[in-house]
Amino acid sequence: MVYQNIRTEDRGRIRYIIISRESKLNALNKDTLFELHIALGDALHNDHIGGLIITGAGAKAFVAGGDIAEFKGMDAEAGRNLAHENHKNIFNLIEGFSKPVVAAINGFALGGGLELAMACHIRIAADNAKMGLPEVTLGLIPGYGGTQRLTNLIGKGKALELIMTADMITAAEAYQLGLVNHVVSQDHLMGKAEEILQKIITKAPLAIAAAITAVNAAGTADGFETEIEEFAKCFNTNDYKEGVAAFLEKRKPVFKGK
Image (cartoon, rainbow, N blue to C red):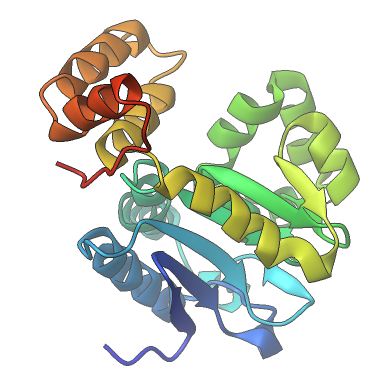
């Protein structure tokens, strides 16, 4: 597929997905969301790709939110369909992705942009980045998982404060809250994201996928049972056998995701 609103680039086993609407601060209109869904599916089913980095074009914005012009005239049913479709096709898909996904937050991450970053497994922010959920200033609330994922990441009280005040926070404040994993200079952002992904993709791919599934279940009624089940499944993989053999033979394992 020829993309109009995003770009993809492979660097070894890492695939970059770059939201590329720089003149619109990389806002997520419906066409961009559709292309993002296609790109995610392509990466998921490409055996050569070990992990993803999602970022925005330019130095100003990761993603500055949804395309508000497209919301005009929508009623409750249209809003419900919009949220439901994009939860399924984008945000929940990323959260449950069986390969590691890192958000490289290179500028403003607001509204749907911050929700996109929060759906990723790991978040790295440039020191000039600013984040927030300003939806209440439009008479809305976050609809792409923001109320749930922000609460899980930083706690109920602070999540309510940020959502209800619509305040933006700096990268340093986001780090203090646990919203991002690391803060680095703009020049080192992609290098840091690649460094972390490179560490991850040398590990057993099926074990990484199992870890993502188990961690995503944390705090739910089935959390511990999910961990037990994923732990048990690992014993049936060739990667488990290779990992144990390599440990006993004092060599580096060669995992094949089988």
